[in-house]
Length: 138
Image (tube, rainbow, N blue to C red):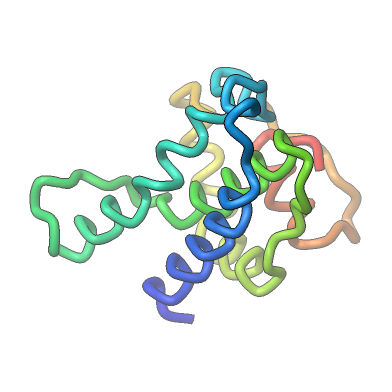
């Protein structure tokens, strides 16, 4: 699947979750221990600008290669933190796994950005494998 389509779909899912966040939840904790709800919303909302930078349409942007994975996984973080449905699009989960595992989480761990991998069963769903690889308890 085309990278633009993947990111676009992940962004639409993020918006679906953000539409249900209430103002009183902005200071609530999230599965990303260092971020509260507001800190998760900021990069989710800013993700499209980073992606446009990667496409050369915003030369002042300096995106990381894991923008799609961030958008997808942080959508789950936000949904979990705010009590909404955290089910991710299985097609996006599989695409993300194919693109980024195991290299990207290992790079993130070595940089101190991702926690220790959570072991999931061999027959776990793609979403659970992705979340476990990125240090989240599915």
